[in-house]
Image 1 (tube, helix red, strand yellow):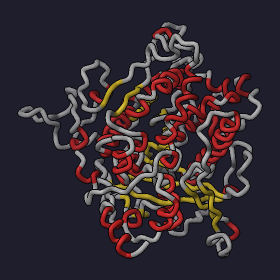
Image 2: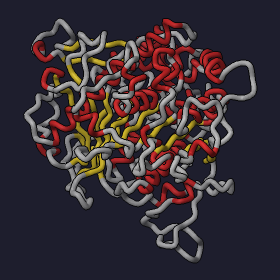
Image 3: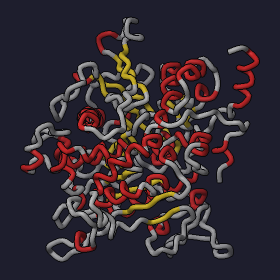
Image 4: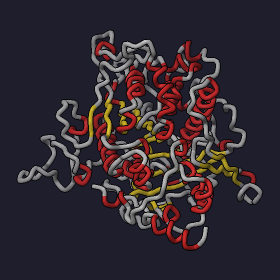
Length: 560
């Protein structure tokens, strides 16, 4: 490419993308953690394909002291050149252009996350003097940084968020430090690369097997991450191979992770499917039909910490959950069991402990939505979701799940990609205002936590611009009806199910009546057929190549 063509191309690139500041009252700190597997007590046997996975890696987002002034971190993980090549390929840009972009000292190279690296943890202000804690699992093409806006936003409201990076071939690229080879250069300074593995979206037995193999690795990693969290909180001496992170001692005794049911589990797309299988595999480990599965997804040992942690009170957030991996014939017994929140126990909270948020594109994937409604119901084996499914034998009625969608949004809008690559979601998926999608997601996440007695800060007034109404206990300006400058502590409008739609671009989805239509084909058959049509949404590299923007402004910076 000659210099004139290069200049022409560069002039078409948007400026460096920028994340908006987090809206919670707390500053946000972050640390990068990579711990040798050998130092952790795995709750399950290692699955196939993990011989070169010597560590577990995650990024932690947490409330930081008000005086925090440490530098921001780059959104693009190190090594940046290899990660940039991987991202441009994942987003559908041709390989030659991907190699070219990797040498440009702009755009993603200089995009930073509005957090403070290695900042001091804020002392918890909660009643038990521990911060609520979440584990968030990424989707296809993600990594530990890919959901920084969601994770950082929650941290700014008082939640510690752990974002693992999966080494199953679903991350855009991952680099595993080899503990005993940190001084060698033969493996990129002691690291082994795990590249993104392109798996067909054709529905074949081989594809089901491949996705289940990934789920086994992902769930094994989640079990190890949980063990790492416990060890850090107990002050155990662990080796953090990320030398840019100081001691983890400041986090000892500060996270609410020991009480059964206290950890919040969340994920996007494949990550949401992962958390669903992780919770079910753990909670129902002793159920005969699950124990009889020939090749189980995850089998935690009796008495293991994770078996004690996951209960019927475990909260679950599912963003655009991708249901195809749940449908593998091998895992049918697991599919037919409900989420733990629907257990036939008096203490089970039912659907109020589940939040599922769809993009408009996933909402319009009708057959997939019908299947998802069954997954979110008390009886996934039932062909149609009926009111009777939510009635316990005792006569007590369980609440339905919180299921909503964001209008004019695409699958990538549930992650950082909507803000960083607005031209992709606009040009290919006709999605608008990526910040709005994340803002509405945050409102729902905070309210779901409040409804389940998790202490979080007030929803910011700036996040209420899409509409709301106020609880009588909240202060508001009586002259114009606007919320007070501090926001509100009970955002009931975001969960309004009256059909009055008080929040713009936010719609409730009623699961009653969804499921199998009167048709010769099952919902599962139809979802399998739709998998090919939706492959470009799930994996942009499967769609048409994406051209760079022709504008010279960052759309996300001007979004309302």
